[in-house]
Image (tube, rainbow, N blue to C red):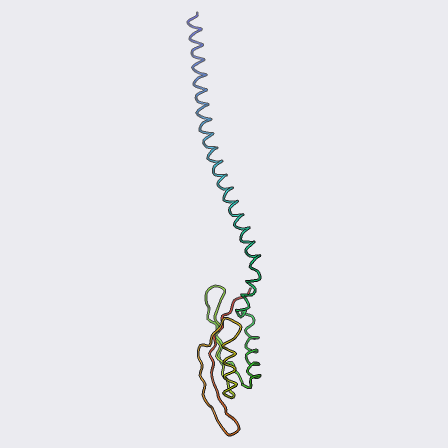
Length: 177
């Protein structure tokens, strides 16, 4: 009987051993899988923290550059202010003794938020008044340049010295929402 009892104990011991080994291997693979999940979550958390830090930096940058950006916008003509700008040009011409008439107005799309306003103005008046208007065009408080100038004497009498001209002016405008 001792042999049978020994066999039963050996079989039970072997069964417990193999069951323990199977549980150990199972827990080992579960632990590896959970470890991978933990690493993925840590990586996602690190990315979230990095994005939060970047966002915080960007918000701070926006806040610190508000004044500079508003100053920069004064150098570009707003898309909605084109009519006011044309009225201003014509009134400045009248103040200088010249008659200014807008002959053509076109907008060329540029990149993203900017476009170029192409204004052709016909002018008449004395040489001095046209020259003064030209100087004003050259010193507009916007990102602009005079592309082409044509001036000619249109008539001269003892009392008047009439000149006429065409000014081709380009102004950078920005699109507003």
